[in-house]
Image (cartoon, rainbow, N blue to C red; front, side):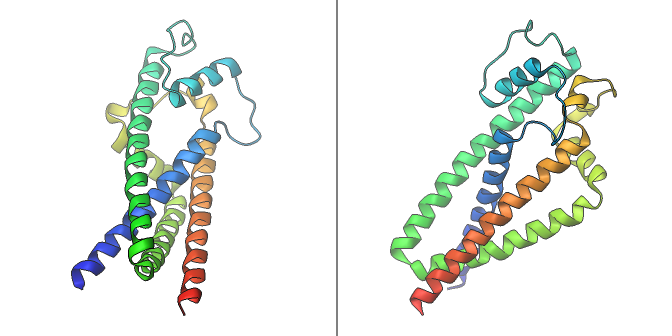
Length: 199
């Protein structure tokens, strides 16, 4: 019994992680510049997102607007997001498979997993809000973990700073957490609906 409860908690963690990654992937594909901003070099901006999203390797001529340091960082970002996308695909397949399995074999346990996932997700949202109060240091810490040797630091006149100021990342996080919270509300509604049916 204890082993099964542990399994359900692990599954709830996996499901919450899948929903968070799904929120990130959706935001990454749709949100490419800060709100109310004027894009400098729009053609290059569009080509850069094609490079990042569609895995197309753009020629050096197309990327001549960037310095070698900026090109290197874009390559690091591209590789990072390729890895995140692969993880998202993997956990999504596993989560969906387990949801389908429990739906047909132990529906009441699936409701329990939804409940666990909802509360785990709320803790993630609460932690995100706390970190947002010191967003700059949180931002720096995350980049230090993901990009070694300060490859993410650029001068103020860098085109990447023009395109992706701190406000972009703040808005990005707000959108991700908002989408994630909507997913949690959907889970909560499924939990409540199925619980009422069982009752």
